[in-house]
Image (cartoon, rainbow, N blue to C red):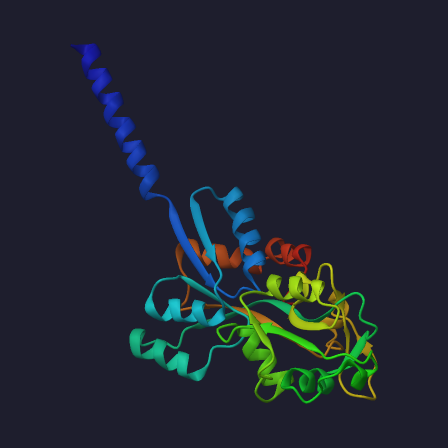
Length: 277
């Protein structure tokens, strides 16, 4: 009888322990920017290895997709490579009566990708804008060979698409610009196309030439590096953001605090982005 009671007690303790282990797991969902996805995945991987009580699910889709998910309540954190639009803030306010919380978490230099066989090695911001607007259509117009320029860009849900359009193109993209579903796809396209040009996060520039960029015709040209991003000499750089409905608490706050800590910011440089400070 005594043995039976001991076994029963042990069984109940095991059930309680299992139940506790299930209820103690904290889940954080992160969705949005494709530019940020490799960084967000690395952050999640390292953090979960140190905090097994926390599960972090990271998916991309684009900044607009992430912000929409934040507004409809299907993600805890929206990653975005652009600031939220006023219309998005209004939707968030209408649903939750909050303006949301914006957290700059990294910096990025938007690289201009060229094929390695391309003789052009530097362009001004104005030239890049005119190329993607369709005003410059041949490489000979910017010092290259006599061949038509092939344009590769992001889809409209991308924060990089919006930022590049607003700050570099400053008009509509040329109809000939091929929209691709992610930065890696743009890099692969330019890698295979001798006359191609694309844009995207500096961390993705593998197998292509990183075009140096001039602020204007009289300025020196710079590549996106930690130094040129920090001292603002590289002219196409921006913050990367995390957005939340309200001030973070609990596991989400702990995770964001870690991202902004020296340990989390160190990972940014390892991936190929740039720390906030």
